[in-house]
Amino acid sequence: GSNVLMLAAKWDKFDCVHYLIEHISDINLKDSEGKTALIYAAMHNSVECLNLLIDAKADLNIADSIKGFTALLYALQHREFETANILLHHNAEINV
Image 1 (cartoon, rainbow, N blue to C red):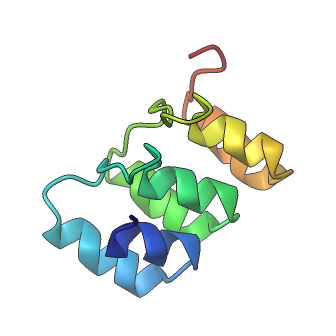
Image 2: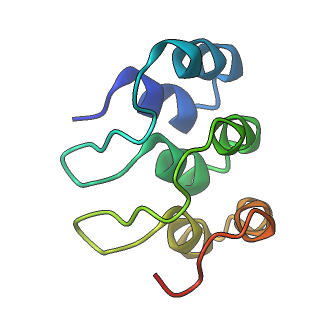
């Protein structure tokens, strides 16, 4: 299942994500489907949390284990174009 950081990123809980980034050893942890907090933020257009995770050096190019989608691909699938632009601006790979 999802961890607290993933849920906070999904629901755009900025203060919670900020706190957790400082206290979790691995912000790239994956859930049972291989999704990370960054992927959840991208899927749900949680722009502030996405930026926090990027600033904390979250891996932009981790692909999930179900579809092989990265945060960028999920953002595009969910038509979250602002999120996709942010990821591209930070050099997310198009062909992973």
